[in-house]
Length: 206
Image 1 (cartoon, helix red, strand yellow):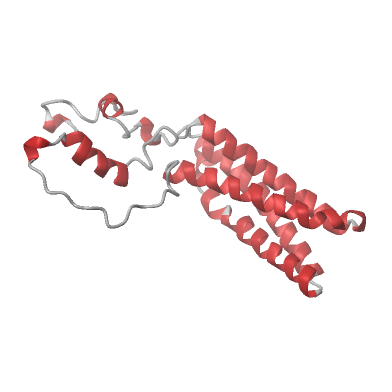
Image 2 (cartoon, one colour):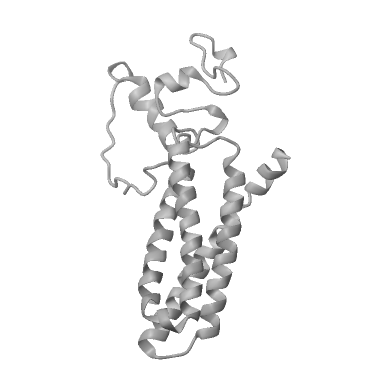
């Protein structure tokens, strides 16, 4: 049973983009309706309903995906509850849009839902790519040529490679294979399959 749920959970990253795109598009229609006095009642209702259905489905698949235990519970819990809150806020939007007595609250509620969705997406990205995935890269960084015997090989050579190529899947928030590669001690500790680096035994290392 777990294997089936785990397989279904792999569709979470695919499904999650449907309510995101639909909600942003619906928000654009709401703004057009408000400022240009055009009527988009049916598309807006459909957009909200579509967003809600797939947001709920994404939450369910996300829960299945989390059962693998590869992610940090702290950031995973934040992402999960924010996702559930976003789905609930879409349901409130759908109800408010249909109820004429609450039309004046509709746009502020929609703005709140968009903000909530964006924060949820940020945490989702942090789980997938690491917490610094939105960090602005440094351009035109000066390249220094140094002698090999004058540097710390791990700090200045190995760690930057791991940080750019491996850490996004093997960090404190995403424990793929139980392996963390963001520090020397974590690398030496290894993962679920045991040690990956054995000192002075390259043939036995992975």
